[in-house]
Image 1 (cartoon, rainbow, N blue to C red):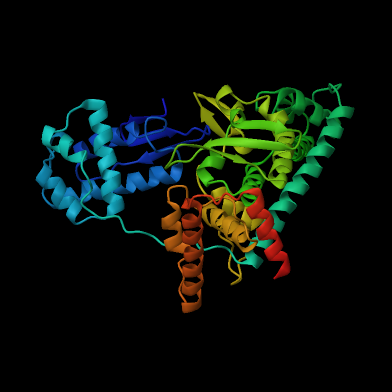
Image 2: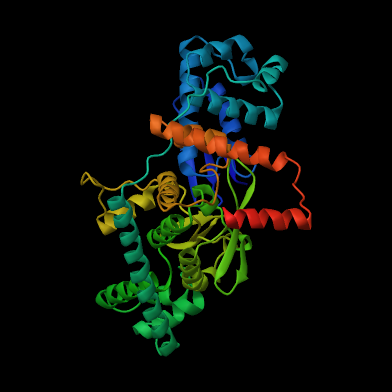
Length: 450
């Protein structure tokens, strides 16, 4: 079950597609009955039935739930969701925002999908348009050349360093074997055991950490931690790969996160076509540039040892990693997780490499800006491939937003292009001129003598 409601204290527990779990605590609200009904709607919106598939999304919906319960209680409402009337909701949404109205509408729809207990007029009203109008936002601002180069250099350094350490760990494992005694493990034997048994806490290499003297236990733990971090990809390393992949191919962030092995199609020795789902549109495909193909090849080789120990639901995902913190899945423990459900790992990457922006402040990795920068840099090189930056926009919309002429010279140039195009269309519409052999010879003679 991806999400379920818990009592005492009231909370909704989520299990995300990447294997991580998180609980949204909702106790202490002035109307517990309304809060519990909305909590059912929150759980019903969990992935795959709804759009909640990350911790940050849960937090946003939980805040909307709390605000709705508090605001309605302050207005004197003491009933539960089935007692809500259209007038009550309209008054609340008139004083709310577009985002809060959208989130609370989804909570009510989720509750009705589970219980079917909404008033008929409320259910019918939820199918209509929102009261609050959507405020259009400005397009993402591209990173400067300096910021882009520092981000790429930093991610490249993390990727290259982790790959070198991974290769050394594999060489150690090739020279290792079953330890002669459980209390004495060489780095070669540790690498061999981890490569054979995986990074799980119930394996012999971990049980050996509780044997021997305190000093030997600590030495063995440090050795295991070092070899394990070299052999299997850490979440921060996985983030460096995925960020660099986005910088190389410009695919939308949700498409990168949800990319699976079944979405990779080799069309040659050095070419890959990826198929992914963009959240607001349908299935899309992209032919990867050569740099992205080489990076993807390395990642597949790097993650192969860990992938062999992953659960079925994670084995098919492209982005997996070993997490030092154990996450409960189905009552057990698993150190293997999918893409991070929040931006904490991005901040960890920035902190680890000491990345700063042009103002000297800690760099903020925003993958929407990465995509915008990718297309902006392509445009500066005279790229004439894809017609739109956002597939939700028509070419005319993109032109109005990004390439509308602003100076008289630009307007004259655009008008000249339009006139030439219209002349070409008219010329193609005229009937062809057919000359006889004598007329053609006479024309050539006149042309040569003039």
